[in-house]
Length: 249
Image (tube, rainbow, N blue to C red; front, top):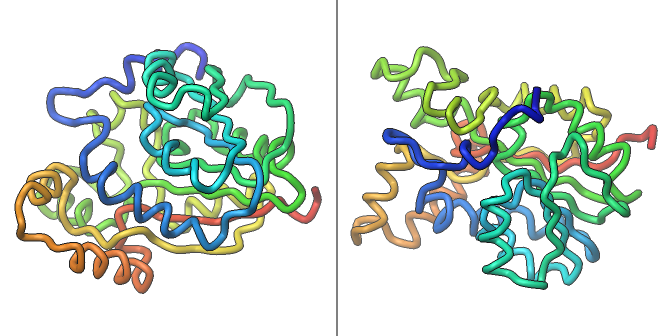
């Protein structure tokens, strides 16, 4: 059951697999914001799974009414230390939390794959938390990223959507593709308005972290990988759906 999990343990780095990489913070976070920005509504923003607040901080220019729900008390304490009273923090499980209102924007990035019952949480977003014209920004790691496909050919993982032992330690329950992500969004009642990918990626995160320490990769190259990802979303590091509340709401 979800309430038997120790989320403070799941966020810790394993010996062979970090929870978060420099690539996530320095490359993926800016390009996620770039992908979201054209669709942001004015008004409130709910982030489900804020981790230690690095991505949360990037929302501050877009909203002065930000609420974050985070299951890990350790991660939330660090986020609070960074962001203070700029954000309203709630330490709770998505399955259990009672929120005071509906939100104009809801962000769920690299979180859905951690959930024991993802459709249940997506239904709560659709039925309880999205404002009438609200938008959900849903991002997950992509099973079909070239880096994962290469890992399959190398014999490091058995198939594209495999969940490795290291990923399990960090609480992963599945690895999504574009079609399975949309399947779960639709099953929850959400309406998928926009589909895309974020950043063409043929190297693993640890390889990117090493590469980013050099002058081999230019800003123009990073921008090229982002633009190529718009053309080939199924070959991106992450897959992105922008959803609105279903018509039954």
